Image (cartoon, helix red, strand yellow):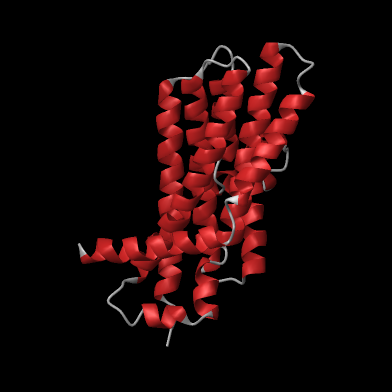
Length: 260
């Protein structure tokens, strides 16, 4: 129980710090984007209007949430080092893995609230424009949040050994490359060079397959979904496995750093 209390304390403190960084202003930005999109799309047919509005909305949620996760997440450990509070933290009976998990969960809670607020706003606007498939929207928003959890894990991992600027570059690069993984696999199949093909395949399997997650979100919002329910379970398990791996690496690095 003491271990859970330690994680809870770190998570709540991280959540409060994230809120102080004015991340809730992201909701205002999102509301402006969705409102303008609704006005600009008013001349289209109802079905086109709603679908494009939802696509713009989910893309905006993913982008804003990702930016918040990257810029706050990459400072998770650095801030503690800069303020020298990490030395005080580790004088207490707290394991390094509890510190990492607490930081991750604190930012995850902040992103959950921001995503929920933006998602509720998008669902309301979509409903007023004729959308009635709310279950699919909730599932799509859930997958968006799942992707953001992975971005938080990336940022947490890079924050354990790099400066905030380099962590932002690394996290943003890995996030974008994860969406291009399918292209790398296609290139490996097209390549005639026997040395290039296994290299591209290795990079593809090492990167998180975010393109697959995006495809499932697209299928969910299609008028006639054509995916198996097992796809949701599979992609969720895959992303959580990647998150656990990244947090394990972050803990491994933190265990080997001297804070004295």
